[in-house]
Length: 331
Image 1 (cartoon, one colour):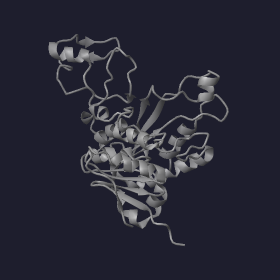
Image 2 (tube, rainbow, N blue to C red):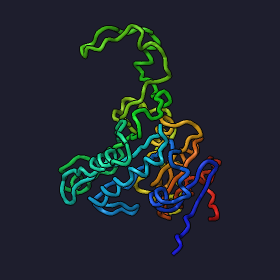
Image 3 (cartoon, one colour):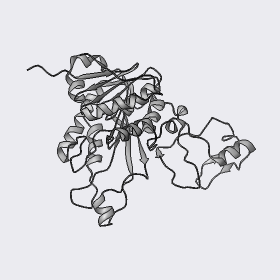
Image 4 (cartoon, one colour):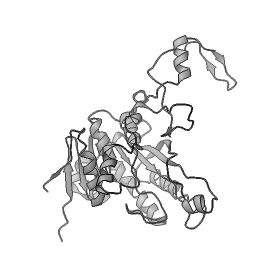
């Protein structure tokens, strides 16, 4: 029986393919030219939840096997200095106020896969105080647990030195640092921590401070500004007035429930790639990744299996302020 041909939508710099990404990337001859060519794989795969969601997710051991089998596929696609970024949330044991270890087991299985040669470069935490209280049974009903308000972001690569430049994702200086730069004077010398601070080590203006591996998407302290890298500030995931969400409301469409933050996508695109590099998202949902890559002048390829989310991606790219709509190709 002949395989049903996938729907393909293209823009100036990339394409969205409607189909099962792992089957296509692992088996399709037409995808062989991607092997070793992808500079960044960035994705938020289905989380290891204990109930089925509309966007599709496996459970328990089935999820662990599914996740582990991604390792050799991703490894084959990555360039030698390429990076893999995975955002993943926490899971809880069924009917118990106990956090599951499934997400950690998934990480271990990925980086220890004997055919993939992957390693964890660094972990990031994305804190979002606007997340709905969960797990609801134990937070809002029984009030036994606190709100699960963050996700893990894992930076993984095939060697110890993937392409990266933290000078491209600097945070704005704090008010105290701006004052220090203006005064050109501070207390140097040995600290209680035994670090020795030189006399001029902090007097040069580098345009901002080095980013932290903790993303504070909204302020922890209302008395101070959030100091996110400029690349994150350029795309707010919580802006309810942006074109995509306003169009979804207008059309009566419920947006993808687990959209990856555009700020996160922009951060890693700027941090780990150069203009013209290839960015891939195998579980793209409403295709925030492709949108950010297009605006950042990167080539991109995204996959999404569900028709409803492909339609949402088309809405995202139809923004009148965006000059690269998604156009369906004849296949």
